[in-house]
Length: 426
Ligand code: GLU
Image (cartoon, rainbow, N blue to C red; front, side, top):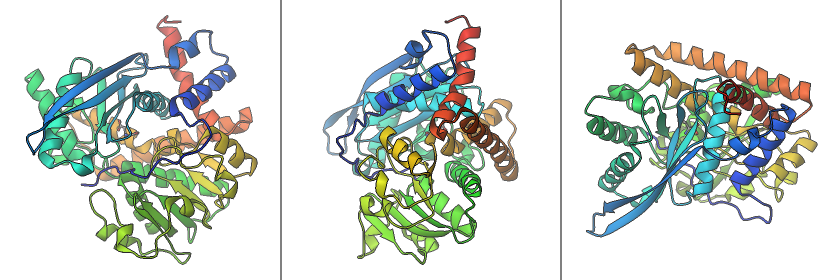
């Protein structure tokens, strides 16, 4: 049961790397290009609702620790809001807000009947026991229970949360409501109504999207040199899928460092020996730093860790021909401009990492209908949705002469603004 780990240190740079501000900038430009009604940007630049909660937990040593958590609901014009919950020491209100905006765009691009939501608790799960994590997870659900639910806002896993945490949360919600509520949350274990494929869906989705992007750049996947930054849920599964497709994984990293071998790393050894937080590099002596790994020779670079890894400080020195963003927000706007000028194709996070929420949607549909699909059905349906999304975003970028980040925002916001207009909100 792997955690979605993205525990690499945020890089310091002089550039403005506030994720909320830069998401708002892109939304503003995309809405201008879409010629949306005035007032649309004012409405969409922030979540409609943000709840801040404080959760007391009796720690194993008898001390009471109070944790701060958030749940942001960006917009529910299209349908209930949807998005993961992250447990991380760097969680802030602005980050959770930005993540909820990104979820709206992901759901728009993939045409899911949802708006975006996101939650987070500021904590360090690596330093907490199983018992403490369970109390924190249940306390969070009690605190936000009034604003969430299967037809209101549906949580899911994100950084450092997994199917066990989803199971505790679902159990707590079912107790509160006094009926079984599997569709309250997605990313559950199979025994509690989880879907085939949800655990590796982000990695599988990134793999599908990477193949499309490689085709555009005439890179054959057979022998393509790939660097993956981050070896958590997304990073580790996608290393496996890309390796199985014939690619050569030349670099990987975790919170402690990075490994690089131009002849290809032994992916199966790395997968078998990593711990539940995705750490693996401590087993090696010849380590690089995460920053050094990004600048190594490769065809495809996949940041699968946290925000702000590719900035104006390192964008000029990146060697990859294609960057596929498996993490949320790994590239700053200035870095995007520099890389685009250098003719490096960037497949944005809101498209590349959408596989997770697509299979979450499948899980919710299966829970609602009480009828479950095979693994093949899940993969086929995922591939269809992601391929259509990729083609749509790519064609929009060509027609509008904009980079794929801006076209992804345009595609994602189009349906949302239309739903808002139909409802008469603007
Ligand atoms: N946390 C994942 C994301 O950022 C999945 C969200 C979901 O499954 O609802 O896309």
